[in-house]
Amino acid sequence: MSTGRAEMRVLFAAPDHLWDDWSSAMGQVAPEVTLVREGAPDSIDAILFAPGGEIEDLSPYVNARLVQSMWAGVERIVTNPTLTQPLARMVDPSLTQSMAEYCTGWTMRAHLGMDIYRQDGTWRNGTVPPLASDRPVTILGLGELGRAVGRMLSGIGFSVRGVSRAGRDAPGVEGIALDRLHDALASAQVLISLLPDTEGTRNLLNARALSLLPRGAWIINPGRGTVIDHEALIAALDDGHIGHAVLDVFRTEPLPEDHPFWSHPKVTVTPHIAAETRAETAAVIVAENLRRAMAGEPIHNLVDRQRGY
Image 1 (cartoon, rainbow, N blue to C red):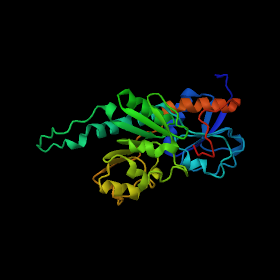
Image 2 (cartoon, helix red, strand yellow):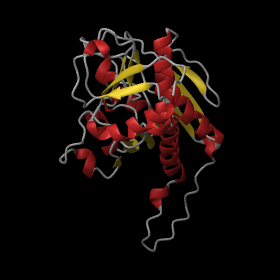
Image 3 (cartoon, one colour):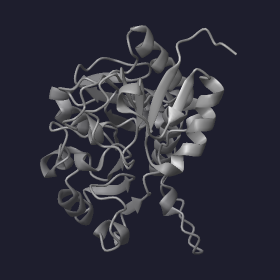
Image 4 (cartoon, rainbow, N blue to C red):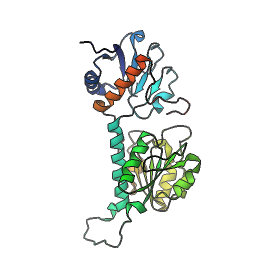
């Protein structure tokens, strides 16, 4: 049956365990797409890419009109010297929703002081948390994910500020320009990092930056592990300046068994599960971008190579 759309051959350059879900999802939403694991390079119209697949050299695919990342983060591909095709990052509504839920859940744990109430027979009624409106939250990074987190948190009453390069406001979020980062940190009782991994963000949360946070502040990092200076964070946790750190991303993954984060009483490690691309919803986004690429139309979520995101 004809779909009225141009036929496309798309190379699946991703780990094998993702094939079944993606081939099924793409078949449902884009019947004009033939998803293949191999083929003559000059026959490939586009590439669906995730780190960990067998194909890293993209230079033979001279006719590919798009490389569509299956991840929101693109640091593992944007620096690939063989990448000459347009690159789009993934903006999956399910990924966005799950990230907002993750950040909201851990923010509520910090806000309500849930860890105080150990079930040990002690009646601890001496501490009453403030209302959410009196608990300032700062989000580092106001892209698609940061805006979604801000909407959810402000929707339940939190006072939310968001740091971005331009400092523009977002729904429910007061925008702060990156050059005013230290001002934004000074009021952040909960700090959420959703920054990408770039030269400008690595070790951004160093000893100096951490010292500007209010004493007892919580840090939630489901963005990129390179943003935080690990040694500085451990020092700030040890001296009590930082109250707790919830970490979902790390410089080395899986996090080594002997890493001090595992045993630190003020650190919660989650194994990079804050947000996952879900094929059934992401395939709709991919199909639209593939059709745009074939038609010569503007591609959604195109990566700026110089900025790295």
